[in-house]
Image (cartoon, rainbow, N blue to C red; front, top):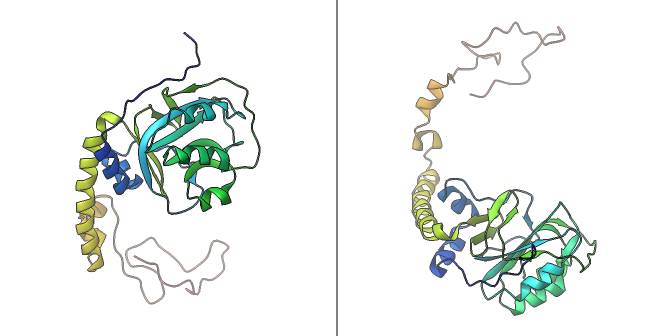
Length: 258
């Protein structure tokens, strides 16, 4: 069997779970699945405000070459997200307006690519969202073999074809397709709890009290002390009013904040 393959597959997560995960967003999804699944902080959106979720179609390509991205277009369907990684680090502009036009025609929701993206103004105007490692006008060739719809590692995360990709201004996360329903349910519960916390905080309740953090501060040895008129603290470390260079300190820095 060839080491380079294009896998035709219909494997997909439940559509309703994908929709709910997209509504929840990356931060909540990340927390809901045990703070796992982030694709690293280097993959950033090319314009703000995009928020998508969909089935992953994966690509493994050679650096400086976008042949396999063209090959992957045929394997996409409406609602998919193309996920592209490379066999070694690269920031070349492997994706631009023409490929986006092709993907948009097939109903693809966006692209996550561990390389460069170009034609940013045009992509922004057509509202085709891309999360990329870099923005670069450096062109690529179409000459090297790779694979489509195989497991890949991108941004330090393991992504399989058919897993759920969630992407927004906070970054990108992957949810294994088998866990999509459970993570969506956990995220929905978490969001409801956050709504109640948001209401309390808006009413002036302190996080110290809402999360019962005062006993923790005490156990960690964090103490409250009152500043004196001279700006020093009662019960703190000794301070004779001198600075490190031996000059007098007139207390102009103000009192310490407790």
